[in-house]
Image (cartoon, rainbow over all chains, first blue to last red; front, side, top):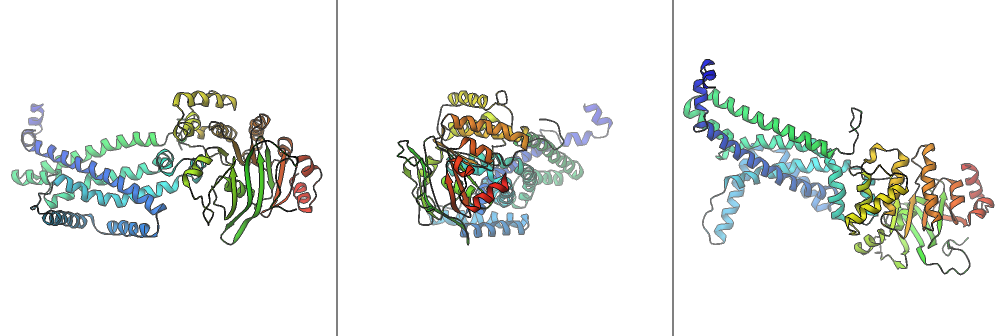
Length: 248
Length: 265
């Protein structure tokens, strides 16, 4: 293996990327990125579900507030939002802490990242899920109602499973955006993959090697996600004949 | 005819328990008054066919009985229990209406099976999750019911892979699974290809024969005449004429009913 790298003239690169050296840092950065992406995506789904239900079934005030939320979040560039939410969030926490007599609080980078990206994801997820819920044939919900199901059970047993097939493609997009938006957290000094890569690259002057490696890692994440979402989509579409014809 | 006091039951003193009573039911959509005071009583074992032209309010009436539509005013009494209504006609007690709905199984024109569940899952859904029947019991009963409506062997099939007639029979099995005290059929054969209507009517006919209480909104006049013991003709939100099928179909009194019957014949 080492011989092959030497033959290709990549010996130096392989050494730079070794796990005990900068390569390990990159993988730790990737792990941080994925942790935040998972958390933010999850938080976004929860916000999105409440947001979608609020927009569809809520009162006027709820709907107006949610309209402001989704409009503002989707209008402002994510980088700006991250800066705003990050500094506003840590400011509020510190104010509260000081108000309660405590000192300044060290903000946990992962938690801050999840909160910031989760709020952004929530706005998009609200729209994805609202569209998906709207696409569920009204008769399915009506049938559940007519058999005495209470509202929450209808949501859990009928609406959510039935809307999944409509929501999965949009949610897959949101997940991929989440993985890549983690790179924006580099601006607030969070050690995710992009920041780790930049540090490695500027320390060694091997920009090409490290950014190519980071690109490769992002690509791997995308490819694996694609495979997972393909399975999720197949499951979500159970019971629906494929458009290509034939049986399932 | 005074529609407010008209009852669907047999005129002589009838000891059978009252299943559904509707009194002076009004329903408006905006400015459009669809039901203008309809009253109807169905006793245990009654098969009441509701006929009428499109827009006569027959489906709306059926849907008001289990509050899928909110009545504008009137009274609904199911199995002797009056549904508590607010001033605007909406159910005052959500728990009560949910409990009452489990006794009224509805069969829809568009079947409305849950497409992400197999036939078996569709049939056990309400017994297991709403009525809290043990799953193994519900499954055993569901298999019997599917067998009974001629869908034995299709338990694991998803609705989209079945014909309309099969889906509607599965929907009837789902309705039977809750062991309803009355069944509401909302034009159960109107969405079916003509050659599939027969198989669904056969199932409904068997249910009528075993003494199930049902309200049946239908366009199948021949079928209504055959299975119903009482026929109600709605015209523009009012009961224009009602009585035993032999009289309603054999000797219609009002000109509108005569005209209607000749137009659908």
